[in-house]
Image (cartoon, rainbow, N blue to C red; front, top):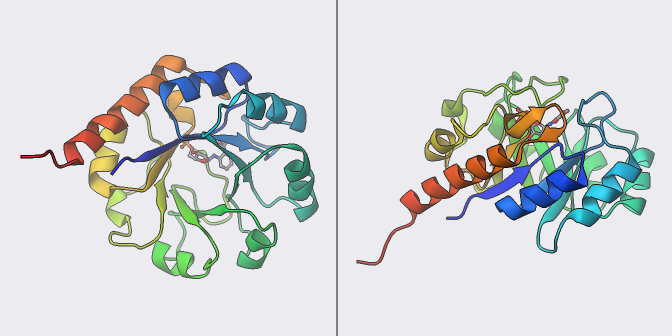
Length: 214
Ligand SMILES: O=C(O)c1ccccc1N[C@@H]1O[C@H](COP(=O)(O)O)[C@@H](O)[C@H]1O
């Protein structure tokens, strides 16, 4: 299977173009003011318009007012929403858009129990934060807690970088991986060479797992 790759926290059009050239499947725009990767609508429009067709644009929100999400959606072309806070299932579903719910892997609830509450989610992003804490910490969680055999589309996040992503994918076999700080030169500024290395490491593992014709 080809592991999908999302590069999150893009703040500059040139980084979006570099991420797409490197071969990512999706880019993430952070609409959370307290993040060092936060973008306003004008920045987000510049990034969103730099992305070529067939690369998905994901808007990340964390406990935002629903009205703020609607205002952003009205102006910025976003194919997918990502909710990273304590948003309820009803809140997430009210926007009528494909969405990912972040699962706090440092929370007290099992990932399986957490996900069971979000029946309308098209996917889940498992990150290393605790319940009520912000993600994007650059920390990994114990990949041994990965819910194997889950029918859901699961996205592995948290502390991934070019030197650990191959092992992470081997251990968890996720639908997708999501990276932010691990491919940066400074918060909010992506490093093209690190993005290329990250993606080629994922593809290397994909090839290991693809059966060849005898
Ligand atoms: O990126 C952020 O600043 C951020 C802020 C608040 C919530 C989530 C955030 N980012 C998400 O967290 C994952 C993991 O980040 P990292 O690779 O460990 O730096 C990232 O992929 C975003 O989806």
